[in-house]
Image (spheres, protein in one colour):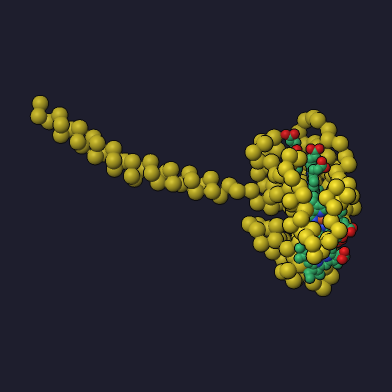
Length: 175
Ligand code: HEC
Ligand code: HEC
Ligand code: HEC
Ligand code: HEC
């Protein structure tokens, strides 16, 4: 009879111990995993797998040559900021030796890091920057008054516009 309160206390104690030893660390672990899931840069070659036609177009875009144009300044950090993809960002461009696949102004320089989108193309949350944002703000990070005093968004956009119309269909598609 008098044992009942005792049992309840033990049960509460056990629950507290279980929570602090198991549930709590588990939750913290989950938060850490989620924090690691920020998208990172994967490079043009990966985008090419599914957006082949647009990739072909981009190869003729001046942005494709932005790195080559640096000539002897290919190691100059000041120049790299605008002539490569994701410089100084997580898994972005580091140097010609370490990250040759991120030379020049690639897809991800305008659309954002695409690792999540590559794994989940139809997940709207995982998409890199799509159509719906104000791209002008992306452009002027590099097209500033120093380098492009006469920058005019509409005119400039026309010159790099993705002309290929998207195809709706199965699996790997789009431009
Ligand atoms: C703030 C971004 C930014 C930085 C930093 C930058 N560039 Fe550029 N660069 C541009 C842009 C934007 C263009 C395209 C300009 C245009 O034609 O509208 C360009 C064009 C060029 C060109 C093509 C020729 C021309 O003048 O149009 C060369 C060469 C060049 N940059 C070299 C360099 C070198 C070398 C450095 C480092 C000393 C550098 N850039 C730093 C943004 C930058
Ligand atoms: C210089 C910036 C820039 C680069 C580099 C760039 N894009 Fe874009 N992209 C844009 C802009 C701006 C739009 C939206 C404007 C429009 O309607 O064309 C867009 C739109 C798109 C769309 C959506 C088109 C649609 O009809 O819904 C796709 C897909 C796309 N880009 C893929 C790519 C791929 C793949 C690459 C690399 C091979 C690339 N982009 C490189 C600026 C860029
Ligand atoms: C595994 C195939 C695949 C890869 C790899 C891939 N994409 Fe896509 N991408 C798609 C598909 C499919 C869609 C259309 C999704 C939809 O209609 O919901 C799409 C749509 C887009 C859009 C349009 C977004 C919008 O809001 O309209 C952009 C921009 C884009 N991709 C850029 C990229 C970039 C940049 C890369 C490389 C980092 C890349 N994609 C790699 C399959 C892929
Ligand atoms: C990461 C930096 C970066 C971003 C973002 C960027 N550009 Fe550029 N852009 C450059 C550089 C660097 C060049 C010079 C390439 C060269 O001539 O070698 C350039 C060249 C160009 C040119 C050719 C100019 C010429 O004189 O021939 C056009 C057009 C252009 N960009 C439009 C855009 C538009 C539109 C956007 C936004 C949707 C954009 N760019 C975003 C860096 C960037």
